[in-house]
Image (cartoon, rainbow, N blue to C red; front, side, top):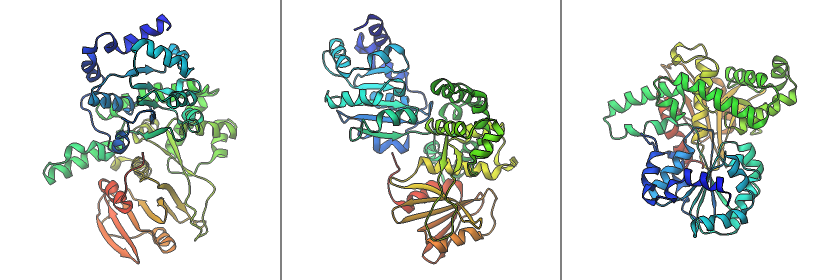
Length: 443
């Protein structure tokens, strides 16, 4: 084994030379407070399985590594942490056979492996496949921030050999865990306060716990989103990439218009399309496809665009004011609803929007098999339960199991044929969605 590589491994894993340091070293890597990630519970139960690669993917700085550190601290056993951003680690992780030879020389017996930010490895999927197929008898936990590279290198190679968890910024349910058990009035007040903050600063852990989330979100956009994307994907026009991201933030919830954006930015349609792919693969934006049920004349060609975190969106539009002071209140709340739905998407479900050729629109449609749930978002403080014409048209055409009208002031329930229509508050969203689908969240 290369002497410099061995020095790095010993420095990154001090328990190798001092076994008594293990628990203190692990605790040092877990921030306080540590909040369990609700959407990952089912997936974490599999992390003790050997001869499999267990992937945790999602944006940077959402707590992927912390989640794994906490798991190892709970298990109480040593593992080998490999920082895949280091060039010497790249070189080492090319041949499974040579890697395992060196590992045996270092430890004598296999230990669990933790590959952090694996997208930096060349042929990561083939390398992990080689380790899995050699049945070394230990779990392999893997984090990655770029689904573009992870998809290209791991999807086919690890078919049947890996479990996957998606980890996004905190959901409202996750940041409200501590309210459980409090008096009802305190729960209601706490939920309202947390929702208002979540709507503005989003769910990135560092931003959520900060007294100056605006500064942290600025650093996150500049240092992680823009720099990483520019360096990692070798973007030729970083100025246009930056302007496109800000343009998309200002148009969240709108249909993607590649031709218009290319004209505004002075770049080609193909360049805009490639930048959109990069942003989506980096878990910064997501394109929401239309729902095509075939029972009405529908617009089915273009998707909508959303950002995965409201804090990032608000930083890009340079506005951290609360909902009631915003001229973009509707778009702001709609983007928040999208982020929450994406985090709690029921297993096997798909997320869409619906728009007819006559202009009728429903913001979100969740589909799983024969189950359909429609959701309309209103930023207003409704006083009476009036169902919009577009929602009524959708219900008459598709007879969804339920239809939710999310607003900031009214709870109400009515029956329209076989469809139950609920007027709900933002804090009700997760419970209502999971109640309709009655299944675990997607991992």
